[in-house]
Length: 293
Image 1: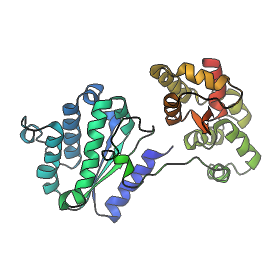
Image 2 (image 1 turned 60 degrees about the vertical axis):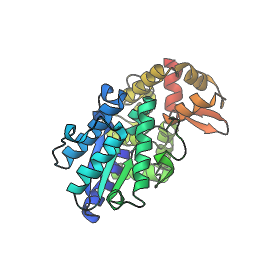
Image 3 (image 1 turned 45 degrees about the vertical axis):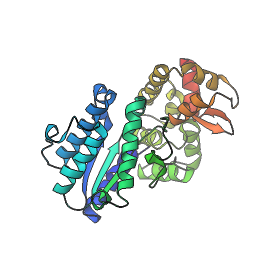
Image 4 (image 1 turned 90 degrees about the vertical axis):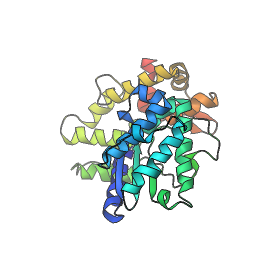
């Protein structure tokens, strides 16, 4: 939906207008072994932050067996990293939802970030630290309300494009003759999903396909969205949600499913709520999963 692009713009603004030191970390770079153990994860997090700041990590010199891993990480920032830099420090944390599958590690890390935020209220060193937490799935990690970093600060949810925005985007792609009716037909298939709409306009503008051809093949293995759809299919199967999604796409109207799978399917972007019931987010998903499931 454009989260990484937005993160990049925020960090650029922080550097240029706020004279801040910035670090962009993608959790896609963390190995599974790293995500499974709190000590391994925090050492990786501290080390890669130091490296991005041009500082020798010296992790072993600043990690003590006498303290908890969370205390070690806090001390590492407070006693080593922060004194070596001046001005604000902005940490841009991308793909954070990779952490959500590891409940205990996620709970410890998220509560620590909340603690750092609270420290900034009365500690001059931590007052200089800003966290930008980017995630594509909603958080299903059990957290005490006072330990969550998601109920403080400024939440930003990126919306789908409106019909007017989709039409404006068609003009930016040089499709001068593109009509509002064509925008409606495209949105009937993929809604206003920025990535899917952008991909469609790119393919059409390059002359690789027409709108009619795109819509005919969109929910198939021959369509331009096959990688996107296959990614979702694999995620559904891995999460054990394939049969629940099958129930949703086979129903001719909105259907009630248990709150936990509904929450997870919604966080994956595959369903939307109608009251307490759900329907597929786009016709693209309904058609594809009706065949695949």
